[in-house]
Length: 90
Image 1: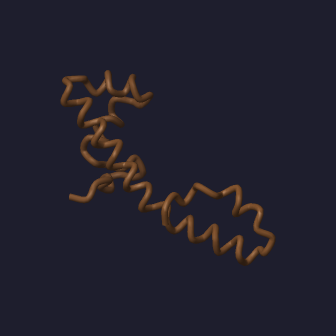
Image 2: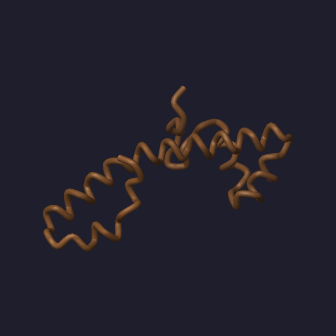
């Protein structure tokens, strides 16, 4: 599926509730893959910023995140849980 969020307004207008639910479900199922892709894009950008000798704090200020979160992103850890679920497949 291309962009699962591209036509949400159209989905809301589907009169048949079963079809509306099916369409919404298909898009919900596609979101995890998009999240993974976006995590990889973000991590690569933060790696690039760190390679420019920016500190965690500098990167955090630039992105509106705490420096600890920047370190987690660089390490490929999710913000969601303890022990950190890998955000990037090794």
